Image (cartoon, rainbow, N blue to C red; front, top):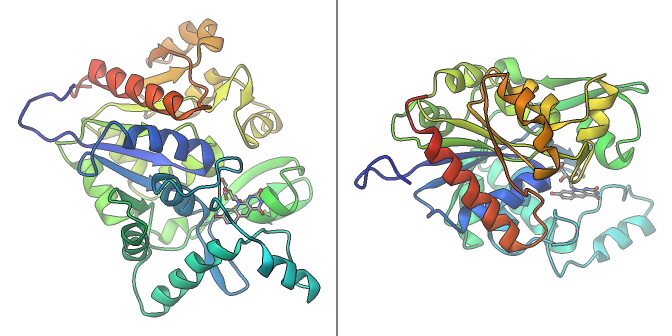
Length: 324
Ligand code: FO1
């Protein structure tokens, strides 16, 4: 697996949303906290009731802590909703569901922000308190906010995704603040370091979960120059997204809703692409993009599925070696 018995293995996973967190969990079962660093999209973050909500950071943190709501994917298990019910009684907005226990995370994050801590430091503190040793990093410590251009005008991400339930037709995306933002320091250092064994783009939505990370100044260039193989796991299986609007977005952007279209979207940075057996017929076309393809069952329903896909991904990375 590693390219030398002495050199520590280092893997960088890029994650957003529920699908990303599933593979991150599988990778965490195969790699130690020294070997796996997870960078999360923060374009979904938003301020609501004066709380700073960071869905993709919290979903990975709760998932690695074994505390996430398995059915929903986001939020905490054993949650209660009394604050939401009380808010409804007062005429407050309840379209964005904040569980009583989840609110504690947002209160503590807000308190630490007010004390001047960076989002990286806050995330590390929250993770440590929840027993998560893995480095879970925001893609940037500066604010980047995804705005979705739709047939009903521009919508902030959570308004599009939750309030409007992804119904509006997308026309494009804007990542507000991204030109002035910097990739999180450790993230960029890792991309440039020689010890990295692979960059793994998790099966997240390419447009609203991964692109905000890739479009941070310097990230795409660092991925192109990266000595380690860059691998993505397709979020599209059999023309459908496992969860969320990725397939619908592809169609609305007049792209194919296919694994091939995702490979094309990442083609300038990818060395390898993992597709599901259902899409084996697209392997040839993807190979034409000068991307090595690995075909394997990629739907993650159980923990074993997550671990198996993570194992396949790490093995695939090893075959691509460091000299790409
Ligand atoms: N997603 C929903 O579909 N409905 C919700 O009410 C909702 C609340 C919520 C609260 C905290 C949090 O961290 C995530 C939450 N999500 C909710 C998921 C969130 O919108 C998405 O996970 C990401 O933004 C995109 O993957």
